[in-house]
Length: 138
Length: 117
Image (cartoon, each protein chain N blue to C red):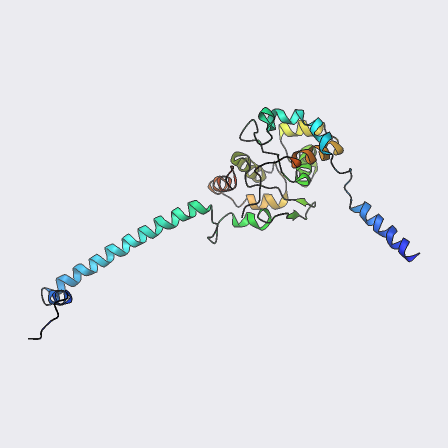
């Protein structure tokens, strides 16, 4: 019989000489469980990261991506139908932002570009955007 | 001759590009702002509106503020009009020059409004 080094590997290898099929089955189960845990952990982590960064920033498909093309550029001016600076929205009251977006949805505010953007937002999107831009946080 | 013609054209272009009313005056705007303060500035702080529904005005772009006030005044009659019972009443009383003055005053005040990506 071959001499095995006493480094612990020998005992693991020795385990395979036991009830092998059962051991492999349990390894398989163990793998599935750990893979599932990893998924849950990853989901939890990415959710936490998204909450910190705001809706969609750093993530494609985020609703704030529609805002930054105009409101994220210092000094950006609207060219149609009149030329003027788009408003500063970060640091504004969240409730005001929410109401403004809903007023564009309903047509109480008529600005064509903002109407078209607001019409694509759900109530949840609006609440998230208001929270992201609103308040005193930098 | 050529130079004066160019200067004349330049002046005409500059006049055409200028807004209908003169640039806003901060002091005149401040003098006119008492009615606005009742809702937009609790205790004289223009970063503390009376209700969470009301916007902070301090440090906002002057040309945006003027456009917004004008859009409340115009209501349905403008492509970018706004319908708001309170603001329609307030803006109706303001001349184009008063709107420019108020916008200049609010814009001159320090506030937390900023650009965020």
